[in-house]
Length: 183
Image 1 (cartoon, rainbow, N blue to C red):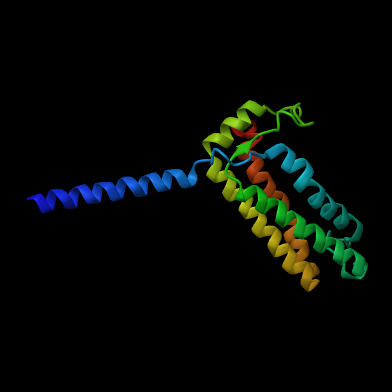
Image 2 (image 1 turned 180 degrees about the vertical axis):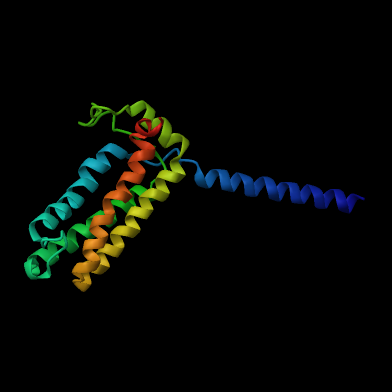
C-alpha cells in the first residue's frame, strides 16, 4: 500500500512539474524586454514588404506577374534583401514572448484611426501563442520568398508576393481589426 501511495505521489509530483513547465514555457518571461508590436510593424516589417510591393508594380507584366525581362541584377538583389529582412523581422516577432501593442515612450503612441491599442493589448495578452504562430507563419512565407528570389523564379515570386497580403491580413483580422467582422 505504501509503494502505491509513493508511486501516486511521485506521479502527482511529475504531473505538477510538467504542468508548471508547460505554463512557464508559454508565459512571458518577466525579465525579457517587451516586443513593441506597432513599432515592429511600422519600422521593421513595413519597409521591406512595401519595397517588395512597390517593385512588383514597377516590374509587372500585363497580367500582374513579375516580368523577368524587367528584373535586372540590382532588382533581384533588392528583392532578395527585402525578402530576407521581412523574414528576419517576422522571426523576431515570432520569437518574442512579451508583446506590448505600442511603446509607451515611443513615437507611435497615438493609435491609427479605427484602432484601439488597449483592446489590441488585451488580445495580445489573451492570444500571445496565436500571435507568435502567425508571426512565424509570415517568417516561413518570407523564407519561401527568399528561396524563390535566390532562384530568380519570377512565377514563384509572383505567387508568394501576391499571397503575402492574405498572410498579413489574417493576423490583422484577429489582433488589429476583429470588430470589423463581428456582425
